[in-house]
Length: 402
Image (tube, rainbow, N blue to C red):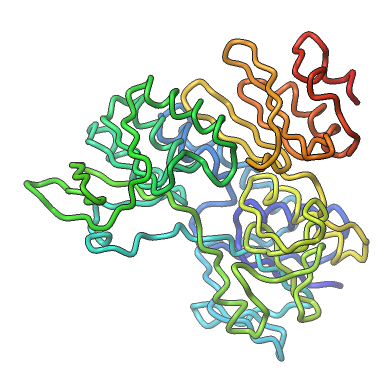
């Protein structure tokens, strides 16, 4: 009987455990989680939880009894301290040794911290866990002046939620546009206009250098700019949790290095979710570490298949989304700014398709137009040259181009 230990009871760990049980009715599956909560989805933390529209129960994908029913041994408040590769054991912080035949590292990432003077002030927060969200929700209830450091997805989601709660909100972004890592300048401009229209003060090209206490508040210094705030939320990405792997001799490089099914260089050890850096077919097998809900949901299935002896690499077209105010943004594939962006706009709805120099769809950006996600995926996967002028005609359905 195979004994599988999964370190990390987040979405990736939970999904891997489920997929393993679907493939092996007899395997022993042990799921170790540091938090006191069973596995939950993180995307609602910056939106529904902060806004109070979701009391928290909706975050839990599975009821607590699910794990017992599926004979998944879920152990909460359990922190893995080391991996003994020779003995094939996980050593917990409490000193327990847990043996494994197959080991999955689903350790996720930690919110990146600022490394500037004043960043250790308790009024400087990050948002990564349910505990973070509940603490921030309580702070926002007092309607503080909020400064958000980072104009990426998480920062803008927090800014939108806080503004809807009646807070004065400033966003500081070191780049010259919002969401520069995942959308084109034209889309950045649209979201900048949305946030400004809702009363968010945007400070672009604004690199924060220090945070100082001042008259009971905080003073943020960024070049010549001085911004007063009662609370600061830092949203500048995540740092993959690779310390366990590195100490065990597993190769890491901004993530745990794996093959396309999550296998590390040590037989029997795998990495799942956003901690894994794997060759991705969409980028011609270039190693990528992808931070997205889709990866946490589906890449662990490829890991489970590898453990079960199936050959099924993780190769789906990248996709992520964000909700800010009443706008839903979905990004598929690679909408590189170097590509030609063909827009199909209708009011607040937009489908923008990125074409390479051969006219092939390489990416798409959708605003309030999720129904176009499936045909856009098919266009990107199809790889055929498209007529840009015809594609821009919104009267012609996208299915006509498939």
